[in-house]
Length: 200
Image (tube, rainbow, N blue to C red):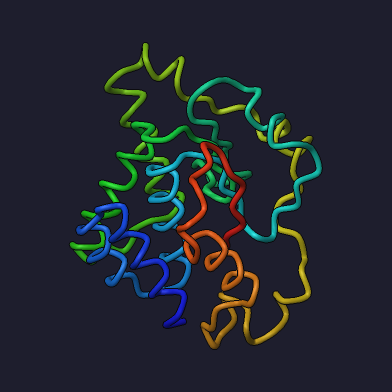
């Protein structure tokens, strides 16, 4: 994955994220790469970030109708917030906190570094420290509303190949390569305030 890593590291440098460059180099799995990068992208530009195996059956606008600010959904059984679909404006405090927690975890070589657990902690801290603001800028709609707009975790053919990201070989899938390169490979185009990114 050297070419993708080069694109990601160049993008992080271009956004003046020196610590983020160092942290990204400390990730030891493509899932950590993806989780950390999506947080950095949302912090810098805002937008809608979805896993590559999530099928949008509605519209991006419908995902944002739950309110201005951060829109996240609960995991089906774990009691945490899932990170396969995130909607956030640029610089949202929960995303900023999640990036900060991820930086500390990556530098400290913690076990839980970048995934749903980290996002859940960041959201909980935001709710505890500023409940009044959090009620207006952070939205956690029921999961049933998510399924009206999106079908998560599609059974894509690439998942049964050795190139899928969590296959035993640990190689990155073509879908992940394509998605990452599309996002960070071309910085000439002007940034858009909201975008849909397929990752995971």
